[in-house]
Every structure is written in C-alpha cells, then in structure tokens.
Length: 362
Length: 129
Image (cartoon, rainbow over all chains, first blue to last red; front, top):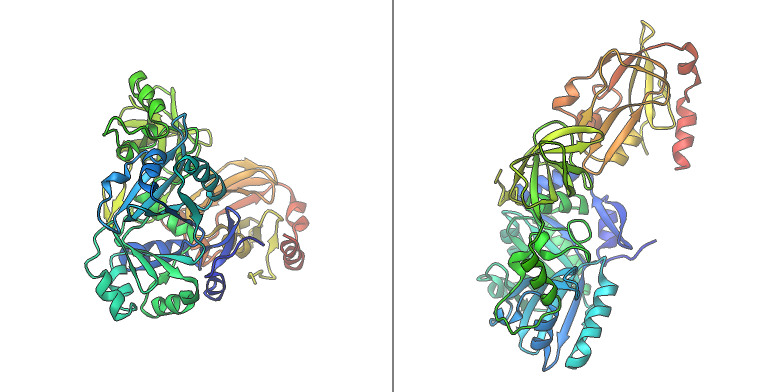
C-alpha cells in the first residue's frame, strides 16, 4: 500500500484503476484513457495532483535565496500571485527538478515541486537556505486538483462561491489568487486553459463532487501524460534529470542570464557549456511509418548514424499519429530514422510542441 | 471480473484460441489481457505464410501504456490476419473474442491445441497473477 492523497476514496468510488506512482497510489485511468484525453481537449477534465509537493519559502531573505536557488529570476515577479516556471540546478548545471514559484510578497513565495523528487528537493532547498536564514517548509494543508480544458474555467466557476467567483474572475494566465482558503492558479500541464487549485483537505470531497456534477470528467495519470506530451511539456525523470543540462532539454528560455551579477547555482557550468557549444537539443518527432514511439528508442540520421534517443513517446490521441520527444544532435536534419525493435522507421523532426488549445501544430 | 468463454482454449501468456471447422485455429488476446493493456492504439500483424513454433513472438499489441508481444499458442503457418485492426485497433478492447481476433493459423502439430488450458484452468491462472 502506497501513500494516499485526500482524493483516494473518491478515485476508488469512481472506478479508477490505481497504480503506484513514485510511492503514491494514483489513478491511471477510470476506464478509458483516450476518452479522458479527449474530454480535456474538447470539454473539461480534472486530475488529482495532490502528490505534488507544496513548499512555502518564508523570511526576510526569501527573494535573494530563490535568486540563488533557481535558474529563472524571481525578481521578475512583482505582482502578488504571479507565477514563474524554472529549473532548480546543481553546480554541474544538471536539473534537480523543474518547478513553479508563486509570488505572494517579498518575504513569502510558494513553490510547487514534483512528487518523485520531494525528499531530495526538500533536502537541497533546506541546505541552500541555511546561509539565508529563511524557512523552507512542506505545506501539507492542501490537496491539489488540476481542472483543464476549453470549458474548465466556466465549469469550475459554476461551483465556486460568489466570493471565489469574484476573486478569480479576472485571473490572468500564470497568476494565482487566494480565496476563502483555496489557492486558485491559472496554470496547467495539458496545453489547455484551466486551473490548478490547492484545496483545503476538509473541502476535497464536496469540491470534487460539485465538479463531477458540473460535468468535469475525472482523468488519470495516463491521460495526463499523453496531454502533456502533445503539449510538448517535459516530464521530470524522462525528458530531463540531474545529468541533463536545461540547454539540452528545451529549457533555455527558463534561464535568466540577466542581470549578469546574479550568481544562481549552475550558472558557471551553463556558461562554460554555452562557450564550448551545446551538442544536443530536445526536439519533437512525428512518426511517418507504422508503430508507436516509446522512450529510449535510438534515433538515426538518414545514413544510419546514431544521433540520439527518444525520451518520451506515445500514440497521440488528438493527432492519431505517434509522437515523441527526443534528445538529438543539434545538426539533425528534418528527416530521421527510428530504430523500432530492429526496424528503421522514418520520422519527421518538428518543434517540441504538437497540440495547443485543441489545435494541431504539426 | 474478466470474461473467459468456456468454448475457447487459452495460453498462459493471455492468448485465446478457437478451432474452426476446417481445423485452422483463430487467435486473439483475452479480456483479462486487454483490460491490463488499456486502450489499444496499434497492432503489428504477422505476415501471411509465416511459419511459427508454439511460444514464438508473432505480433505486437501496442496500448497507450506499452508494447506487448503476442505469442503463437500453437505451431503452424499463418493463413490469415485481421487487417481491420489496422484502422480500428480499439476493436481489441471492445470485442476481444469476436471482431478483435488477430490471426488464423494452420496447425502443424495436432496436439498443440489440445495441450492449451481450458477456461477453468486459465481463470485459475490469472487469479494467481
């Protein structure tokens, strides 16, 4: 028996097939993963993401601490509720985790990190926080629910209290607001509009049931993975990890090089990598032959030379094509071959983003 | 509880087999197997005229989760494959014992079919999983 989120009994009642995910008992699907995927692309679905870890960073030096800890610069955050995506790097420039930081005020930031990296993240953050005298504390008071899809905002609004409706009515993309104990963020991991909401544990059941009644479909981790892959979003541990530079993981945009005097952890290593030249990139692949791309398939150039490997792959339910993310040579051409169980199958190299707001980009 | 029709024979690797009137054997995967796989998105069918031995990998069923090898439960020659699975692989989920059949084989060894498990034995084998 693994760890259980506050939604556990609701998943079981909804007929979920439960699987172990990083030590947590989580729903993989509630029947059909593909139906759940389409619900998010076409209407509204919800995912229990309570296994993710909320870390509250508080203290007079919270801002300079996070400026040291993260490759992106929290100084960009000046409006309460604004969110920032960043890598947390080690001294070698490898990715310890990717995370979202919400700005509450200069002495209080709320950070959400991955489930599978909870212990090492907390240990690393606590260690780095020592010279700054700030507190780094896991916040267990919330469950977390992502509601995603073209109708997600409207359907969620319909179950909010009047006060919550007012507080979140004008909420911009990548902003959050606290309202009657809920922490409502307009963020997500699917390529659709929607919310990620921190829900007080005592209100989990009533909120879930109200959303079900409003027509929001429960969706499992299976659909979450195909949705994020279509959206070209990295999965930590698959598409990048501590041995991978953000410059080779399509995360270059998350590194704030300015101001040059900000000495974030990993900066020296990344600077050296840039000067030496970065060899690889994280690209998108669309399979042109038959089959299904999976992680760890070899990618070859047209002459048959190995130029990299896939890091995630699936059959895209939206595109009805097999797609993948792959770390391949920067000099790769538009056409590559994939070694699929001994057969070489042609694939097209594309930007690592396949679907946005229900529309194909390939 | 998964569906295990009494009139079929079964392999421990979750294929079912049915003998036709002409003595050929139709093969598919069981309800238990399709349930474990989840939504099927692609089936790699064998070539017609392929000669196989019992236990050989002969086809691949790919679901949203993973690729899963299908083994021939008997020795023989592939005489027909279910081409309709190319366009609608999800038939394996909706009708695994009917329209979701995968291939038909002309057996080369008469006892192979008799040696397969009956429904009761297969049901017990998946209880132990």
